[in-house]
Structures are given as structure tokens and as C-alpha cells.
Length: 461
Ligand code: ADP
View 1 (cartoon, rainbow, N blue to C red):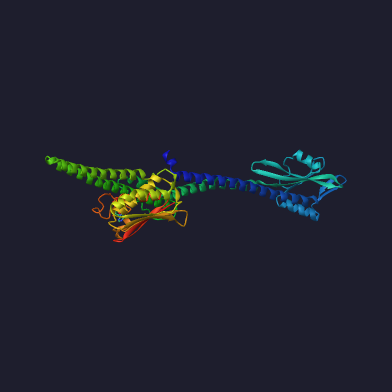
View 2 (cartoon, rainbow, N blue to C red):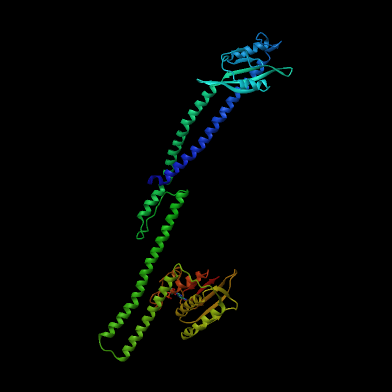
């Protein structure tokens, strides 16, 4: 029964079932409407004929005659010629005269009794062997007295014939239409769902190792076309992030290898022969510097790994004005050590909600870079409010600057303009800084001119 679960079969069954219900409802309505219309047409004809025949009934001295020699009587005789049967009864219910083919058919006394009481009505006077004889029985009045009863009857068998053939037609046609609609529905559904099968087959073939495959179905603007292109876009995004991940692992391994090789070299040089106390001390200092770098690098790597997809959950009120002044105070000795002036012009009252530790890290990174890449001159830290509800902080230096071709890449992980120039960093500082700014609904922009200096502008919300 697995086939029953496929969408195309279920769709075909639903179409068939729905159409069946609608057509049966329609058929029943048409059948009974037609029956009612045909019966009313016969009844109208019988009532009219009875009215015409009534004028030919004569009663004198208790004698009832149906005079067909009168003009009206001629009309009554015409009715007989048209296949009608006319029967005349006296008020006691005895038949006086009868004309037409069904004259001697049984008389329903109940119907006659009703007419004696003064009311007219329709009845079936015989129904067997394919005959269905319908009659209209009505009293004939004279001086408000029922003096005779007239009954006009006609074979209504043709109504039944018509209804039978209509019934057979409906019984044959309805299942046929249902079958055609079901088969049509199945093929339509198969056509519409063919791309879904292609998607399923392709999805089976795509693995995490090879995300470069695409569905590449013909572009159509329907639901399936949109699904296919959305899946292709998703695959492209996954492919990109997998590649990024791979690149990150490769870069990280490479960065880790450099200090490890340096440590190995220091150790092997020291172990070659006996060294003086001063040489050992230098070797220890070198080792300490390398481990410091290694430590710094692993911390940054851990930070980035933790951050990916999990922004800091700390949301506290931060006094940005004080925070910036504290950061610049803590970095000033480092700047002055290099003979650089660090100016800080921050107005009071800059406040936001965020993670103060992260913000400190951001500005320390920027100031640290500014000090590192400025041989002489000054560094300026300034801040203010933006036109919206945000804030901006600018760190400008008069340092070496960054060439235009490097500017778009400096926020990439592990990107360094000149690896020999940046001996301390591994190219992760700005990547982390940018992530922190984004976590605070902001960003970082950079402007730089080689030999003139660089300025980083951080916006925060
Ligand atoms: P690193 O940790 O190596 O400094 P960053 O991500 O902080 O890495 O910076 C990336 C690169 O951008 C650095 O290698 C450096 O060349 C360049 N850079 C960053 N800040 C400045 C600056 N203030 N002046 C000149 N170059 C800079």
C-alpha cells in the first residue's frame, strides 16, 4: 500500500471523490427536478382537459348524459382522440359513461368519495405491466350540488421511460467522468511533482564533502521552481560556510605552527651544547615571548569559535564616555613609551546597553593597532552622538596607513597587510572588533592614506 501514500495518488483520489460527490448531488437534483416538471405538465394537461370535458356533462331529471354532439361535446370527443380516457360517475359512485381506452380499469372508491365531498385531485388509477395511468377526478356542480363526477385519465408511462433513460445515462456518465478526472488528476500531479523527484534524487547525491552540486532545475516562477532555487541558495550558503570553516582551520593550523617551530628551534639551539647563564636567560625570554604570542593566538581563536553564531548574552547599561576614557588612560603609557601622544576627547553622557568587557576589547584592539602602526605623531580618540539614536567612536592615527587594495580585506580573519610588519598579531584583532560592533547593532568603517594615517569609525546603537 506504499503507492497509496504518494502525493499523486492521493491527489487523484481526492479529485475523483470530490467530483463524485458533486456529480451525484447534481444528478439527484436533475433527476427529481425533471420528474417534478414532467408530472406537473401531465397534471396541468389533465386538469385542463377535465375542465373542457365538464361542460359536456348534462344532468336533467337525475339523468346524466355526456353529449358529444354539442360543440363542447365535440371538443371532449377530441380529447378522447388525443388518448385521454373520460369517465362519468353519478353522485353515488356508479359509472354512467366512459370513453377511451382505460374505461374499464378499476375505480378507486376513496377518490370518488373525495370528489363527492366536493374536492378534486390526482391519483394513479393503474400501475402495472409498464402502464402508469394518472387521473384527475373532479366533481360537477349544479346549484352548488355535486350532480356528477368526471374523471380524466392518461397514460403517464412515458414519464417513467424518460426518467429511466435519464437515470441510466447518469449512472453511466458519472463514473466515467470521475474516472477520467482521476486519471487526469494523476497525470497532472505527476507532471507537477516531477521536479520534486529530481530534487529528492539530487539531495541524495549531495553530501557535506561535496556541496558544490546544485539542483539547477529550469527556472520557473511557480512553487516548485521557487523551492528549487531556495534550496540552491541554501546549498550555496552552506558551501560558503563550509569553505570558510575549512579555510579557518587551515589558517589557524598555519598560525599555530609558526610559534611552535620557533619554540622547537630555540630548544634545539640551547640543547646543542652547554650555554652560559646569559644565553639561557635570553633563550627563556625568547620562549616567554613565543608562548605569549601562542597564548594570545589561542585565546583569539577560542573567542572567535565561541562567538560564531552565539553573540554575547550580556546586556547591561554601559557608560560609554567613562569606558572610553578608562581605555585611553590604560593605553596611554604604551603610546608614550613609543613617543606618541594619545588624545581623548569624549563628551559626557554617552550611554548604551551592551557588554562592557566586549566594548573594552574592541577599543583596546583599535588603539593597540594605532600605536603599533604609528611610528611617530599622535593618536586621537573621539566620540559623539549620531543623527539617529546611535553613537560613534573614532580612532585616528598619523601612522603608516593602509593601501587601498588591502582596505576591503583587513576585517577578514587572519588577514595581515604585511606579515613581517605585524609580528605580534595574527590578523584576528579587527575581525573580532567587527563582530563586537555588529553584536551592538553597529559596524566599523575605515579610511586610510598610505603615509598619512588611518581612522577607524565605530558606530554603536
Ligand atoms: P593584527 O592582529 O595582525 O594587527 P588586525 O586584524 O588587528 O590584525 O589588523 C589587520 C591588518 O590591518 C594588520 O595586519 C595591519 O596591517 C592593518 N592595520 C590595522 N590597523 C591599522 C592601523 N591603525 N594602521 C595601519 N594598518 C593597520
